[in-house]
Image (tube, rainbow, N blue to C red; front, side, top):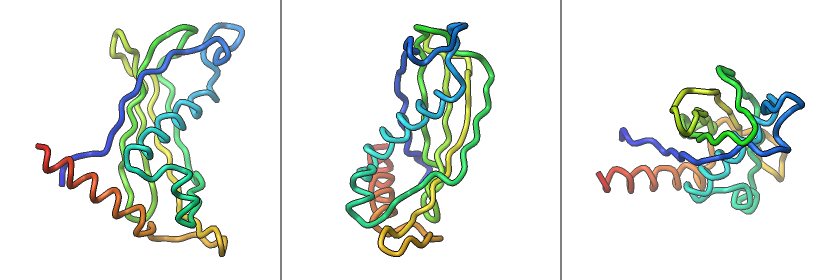
Length: 145
């Protein structure tokens, strides 16, 4: 399968996101990543509520960000989130780019590991309830092409 699970969503830099220089504060990029991650998990059909109901938590264990250009107040941009790994963890890559020019603003990656809620133990293989949903969606995307 060569299809990727991706979402690409618009965001606008709001007043509460910027510092005194009208530049988005660096920590807010994590918020944008989280918005995109939630949209991607919704697309997969395994959002945080469904994770909890299935008995698993998925804490973020690693995050990487590379800042290339600032985002200014009222700037419209897009964030693309792509599922890169799912068998042993959830790894998602992110690309933030300017809506008008298409110039890259930021890129990064997050990694989440499954945790059994009852035992508190980390799992080194993703639960079947998650991997089955990813495989089903990938198959549907393949069938469409």
